[in-house]
Length: 132
Image (tube, rainbow, N blue to C red; front, side, top):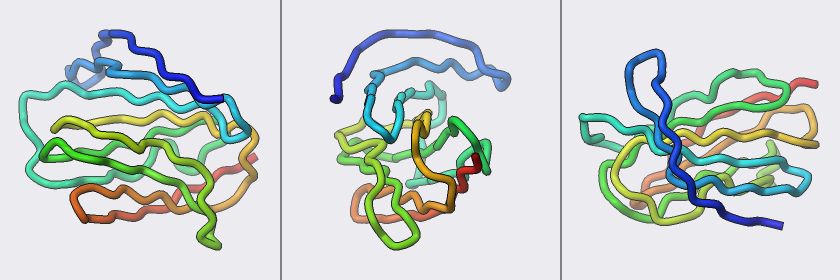
């Protein structure tokens, strides 16, 4: 069952940026919970960027950060090594800016996975590892 809640949360990070939770999507199936945060920043991104998830490897939860230079459809998906889609972390229209997705992997099996960010015809790929 998937539901979306809209809330505003303000928190100061170590770097002085303000995090504002734009929306939090909860996914209560075997693939865990997903939270999407908008990171307020004075500088507008100039390109699509996908950072390495942290922590990596991880046991319970990890964070994915990405930037998009213009408003548009964004998709962030995790795949198995065999190319099977595991979970869609983001699949929606997002405004220009920087984002952080927190994923609690729930009952996802230990292993290496690929995550792919798709935006404006560009596709960026990185890998992550779950340990139990």
